[in-house]
Length: 525
Image (cartoon, rainbow, N blue to C red; front, top):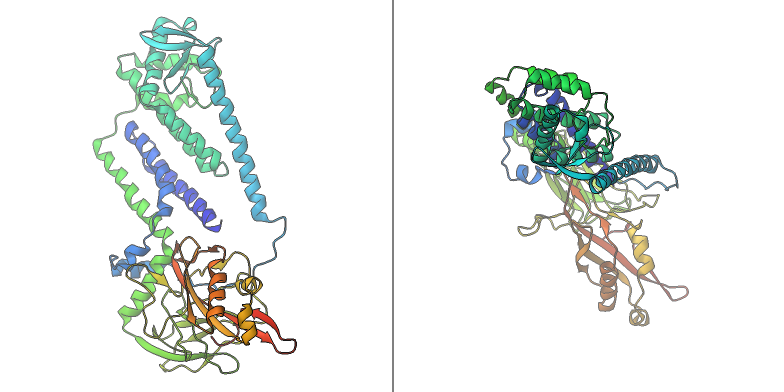
């Protein structure tokens, strides 16, 4: 839901930027057909540009280092945020309230458009069909402004002189031949979904107005006297509109239509300004990928400075026991490492960089890299409050690359996957059944299972990393395979595969000889 909200905000931001660009550079020229294409294109681009990800392209090294570094200096580096306990949800939230307001407004406008479309269809099928100047039209039953909708032309022929009727037919035929109703519907749909954005209504107005410019141009180019046609428009300005959604002959803003008909043609060199659409779109795409660009930039700056060192250290719990699989990330980047079975790690970082340490069930810690390459032991004490939606980090062996050539699998990402059912360890403890045969033999111990949360949030590739007993291993795998979907992890805003390990402890209660199963995250793995 959060990703969708960000997408909607980006779409509306794009519409605002493109509209301002149109008003500043293109709204006064006479390139009417190009303007129509421009207005249609900016709407499409506003929906497309947030979906363009530069992460893969940047990681392949195609970006210019100078551009990346310069952009990094302009933007603040985005740092990963540690998982926070989920707040207890109430029936009323401001998010739900705003969604209901948006839905209500969209529903009202959708019903309004449905009523208008139904009215057009009723007029089309009930009205009298006849031919005017060899063009099929539908006669309106009363005096209303002529209009067209797709292939239908609606007019009251008895109300106009022959010359006026011919002008109307030429005007509306231009709307029909050039499929102007598609543009009209596009503007209406925009207003339905983004009615809260005033720029969308202004954009719809510009779309409708330019369509009338095009139809007026067709009338003038057909040989009709320009002044007589303009007086004709003025005489019809008082007539009511049958349906707002259609192309009306006497649409408002007559003054602008008359000015456009009398305007001197814009020089061809003015076409060059339409090239501004490309850099503006590029800047929007760049802004939408700020995290990816700044992440790469910070790494590039470190490498360019040549001041990196190999920092080594050890991560332990409050008892001094090594923590295997603890995650170490350079804050503000996706660069990271994991501790080995002895709790030791090594990472290339620059002086002054902040190392971010995390482990399931433990408090996080931050250490600033100094002059000494060998860091002291980093202690991660037990988390006193059980986290809701606990994030379990995976680990790789020392020196092992966390990615695969065929399938890129991350051990640490900016947004780690989140278990939808709350605490994953508590959930598994409820689902695990202690094997009877293991109980009878008095077998107990901790089984460590690894798996991958894929881009869709599914649990894939489960396998036992540390075995205790065949029966216990089989039960641990069964529970892991049955886990419901997660919220997938993300790197630079893109869903990725994330590697996890999970300890499941089978323990027999010595006092009553009854089994107990738990997922303990606060002990050494």
